Amino acid sequence: MVKAQIYSPISVGNKWFYKTGDQSFSDEITDHSYSYNGKTYYTSLRTYSWGDKDISHYRVDTDGTVIYLDSKSKLESIEIPGRNAKTGYTWISSDKAWKYTIAKIAATFKTPKQTFTDCLLIKAEQVTGRDKEKLQVYFNYYVVGIGFVGSETSDSVLTYIEKWNVR
Image (cartoon, rainbow, N blue to C red; front, side, top):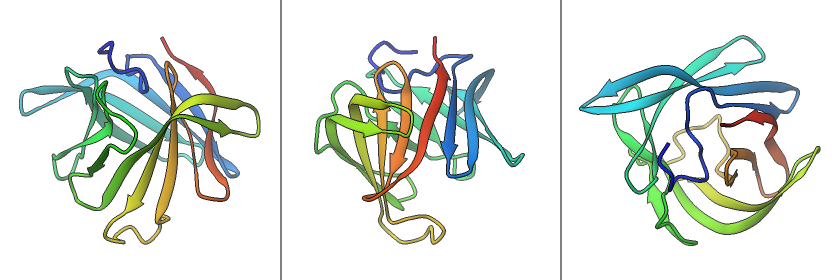
């Protein structure tokens, strides 16, 4: 883990547990790595309560930016900007389908179990309308030292963290 990356602590063994409606899922940084084009990525295993699993690949660059590697296109996208990001900072996913904006640096996110303060709030907006099964806009919250703590729409919480084990 690069020290500058404070909103998404990526280290082997870190695990997060989430609730989404009546379902749940967990994310875990495994001890497997993935190399592509001379770069090494951490492997994240997502396990859903209904039995499905999927794998994602992330790396942290020198300024602390977390970068996601799309397994199909092999293109990289920013997941969380590093130390130089400020409110208003915007980027587009590598597939040009999503626009992300840092909406706030000290937001508050309330879950049914707890309240998180000083959250990094990233607004995700569909640019092309390609993902018909997804909403047009999401608000994603991240906390220093924990990572992703939840997501909401303009009127309801969609996903929230229940517990975590971050080293």
